[in-house]
Amino acid sequence: MPELPEVETICRGLAPLLIGQKISGVGHSEKKLRMPLPVDFQGKITGKRIINISRRAKYIQIVLEDEIVMVVHLGMSGKLIAYPAPPIRLKHDHVWMQLDNGGELVFNDPRRFGLVAITDASALPRHALFAHLGIEPLSAEYDGDFLYKQSRGKKTPLKHWLMDARVMVGVGNIYASESLFRAQLSPEKPAGSLNKPEAKRLAQAVKAILEAAIASGGSTLRDYVGAHGDAGYFQHHFVVYGKEGKPCEACGHSIKRIIQSGRSTFYCTQCQH
DNA sequence: CGGTGGACCTGCTGGC
DNA sequence: TGCCAGCAGGTCCACC
Image 1 (spheres, helix red, strand yellow):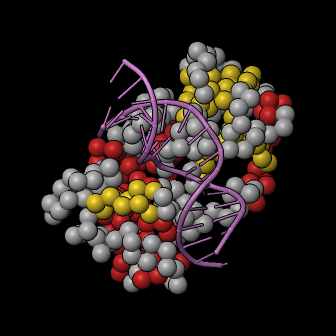
Image 2 (cartoon, protein in one colour):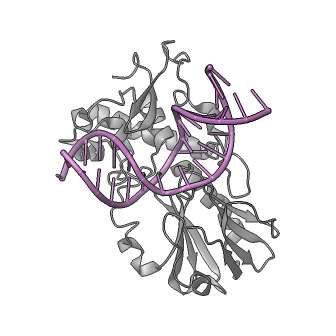
């Protein structure tokens, strides 16, 4: 479901609602998520105060007192919502945490590709979920030179390469297509065939798309909502994603949909090479 | 090692 | 109206 801009939006929305609150009670379903909940999940977080909220890749990190970090990944369909008062239990609610201001933080995920984990802050970088993650695309180190070097020798199509979290994190199916259109690069072009100007264009395009999406509060397609349960609106700015058969806004040529690694890719065969 | 394809889930939509 | 194929914003793992 959510890519970097959606996760970032959720973190920014949750921070003022959660920081300083104490988790006074915890409940959970018995359904298996991508990973089982930690042993003694309730015991590990009950009574802890929330110190900070941050994002790494598509993971939400909720830092608790005593150097404990609760990690939440939303998978394809997850939501993490802070309610001002205890809500009615919904189908697919998997974890709910009462806060000492009377509110409740709820993780709901119909498809259960998401997860909730607990780790020590000091162990976080070496945690299996984080150890092999690539660069943050909004960091200063992410630039044309980086992409050029990383892509040498790679035959992988650009679209798939952009979504490889071992190279760079946060770019998913929507923003990969949108970024490649902006960079005027074909999703089928082998990553290793990028020249330096193309790599620079791609780095700038990815940053620009992600930043614009964050500024719009992310994209709401089916069911993504932010921390307050509200929708983003970057979907209205999609240029190619979901636009199969529609005219390219640059040249008027019909937008094409292809399948790459089992996922839909949208692009303009006239503008992108 | 690199690349592909499937697995993990539920829910919604569109075509018949 | 009902049914079913196809599709969905992610990640991991087995296999060639």
